[in-house]
Length: 299
Image 1 (cartoon, rainbow, N blue to C red):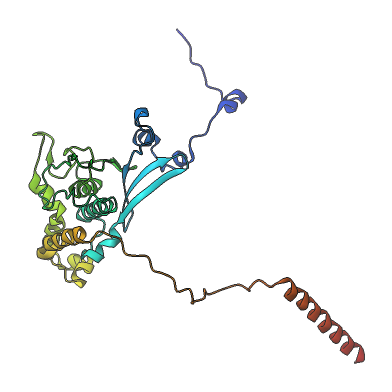
Image 2 (image 1 turned 45 degrees about the vertical axis):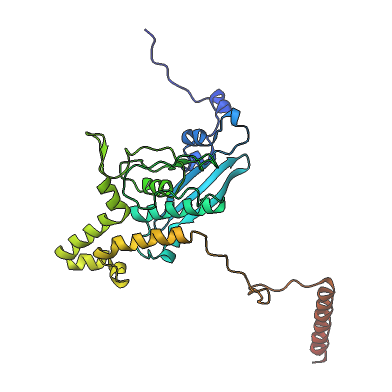
């Protein structure tokens, strides 16, 4: 039998020690997943491998289509949930229904950018059922792969709402229905009605009704912005339907504000002086010093 050997971290150990990548040390990037999402097959040469990147913050949802290069990732299209008020969704910008809208907006914007919007319309009336985009002979469908980052891919997670929105918008993304809301593990079937209710925010509307009937103070506290904007539980589904139609009608981003060239920027520091101005300033300071010295001597 071999006895216990204590590992001694000596000079040889530290000479061979190699630190992990910076973003791994920071806990920001899963390189095991990133490698598989970015490395392209050798027989596809320089064809980019596109990713649908979905990230959630406290107040926003970020959806991007990007591909990797040596210099870093190149983002070719992006959509954010803070754009949804333009389409009629002014509250609940981080829930499952908002994630679906953001994914749909990204898909329609990207296809419009590449001239594929009319060829691939996607699922115009969402019903929660499984839907996949098939390539046509004229031009192939835009294919990309879901990049979830570090979030837990549990059943019903919001990241799959963005995926469903992008697929219904006309993007070809390999996926299954096992992680959509309403999937039954035992029967291995998707309850499309439950999924449809999440797409149209009915899970939020049900909770609004429950609080409104049971605890009015909690309802006012929890859904104060909904009340302020006159969004009732009965009007939630119609709000998202109108948003879907509005996104399909005009997915283009708002044009950037053009700065007025005549307007001068506000400065908080002194304007840089030329050499002639600096020499003149020194000359003035010398003359002032001499005058002060003469005046002091005269007294």
